[in-house]
Image 1 (cartoon, one colour):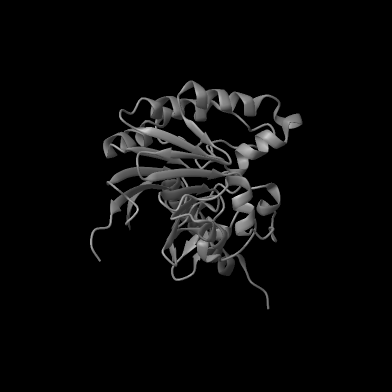
Image 2: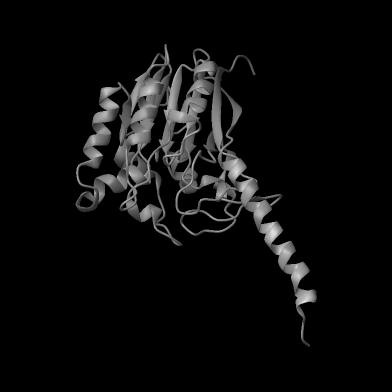
Amino acid sequence: MTFGVRQVLPWAVAGVAGATAVLARSRYERNHFVTEEVTIVSRKLAREWTAVFLSDLHDKQFGEGNQQLVEEIRQIEPDLILIGGDTMVAKEKLADLTVTRELMEQLSQIKNCRIFYGIGNHEQRLCREWETYGTMYREFLHILREYGICYLSDRTLHVGEDLAISGLNIDQPYYRDFSPAKMSERYVKYHLGEADPRRFEILLAHSPLFFDAYAQWGADLALCGHFHGGTIRLPYLGGVMTPQFQFFRKCCAGTFEENGHTMIVSRGLGTHSINLRLGNRPQLIVLKLKQQIGE
């Protein structure tokens, strides 16, 4: 069977039109983040806290100097800003800290708010591959110190009477493509020590693959990112592909519960290797942490 130009042309035009529409939609989504609120209630909380969680910016800018993002956070009037890592892109010839510096400077000017930064795999890569990135990791640490931002890499800080905020440095084998290593509670305890059962424990752990280990260690709330929502999100199926080339993982984005423990996985704000988002708007998360009273 042969096809002439007249038979093929309509299909070609339709294909080009479809691809153009998909790319236009992806561009729109990449440039328009949404703010979504999650409420967590616990008997461990002595007061109400408002926190903002953002992750995986990857040098993305929403307006010049990220003014749209910063102004949205400012209007929320948070007590805490929690950063889940990967504000930059750690790739040879692309690595740059300009956007990170600008954002940290802007966030540090928000009044009555403390900022905590958890380590992601891109910060870890800057540190680990010093022959490629030179002094960039030290420059990153200097930026955080300059603007009074608490860096949590295998570190826990107590906040107020009722919070503990920890940041877990997840080693490279757990980020391995296709078949990452399995994590145990023992790994988390080795890096962070014992969780304080008297305080509401917030754990910044970049990868969402290890909720069981985080919960068993004692995280009341694990905040994760890394998977960028699965790049493309399909109805009923969720995210299609993670940066580690795993497909249709349920934990690409959303809120998950396990025996009284919660994990929230951000869809992130930026992209890097695959510059595409479909059905997957960038996300800023507002956390309302409330004291549980009564039953």
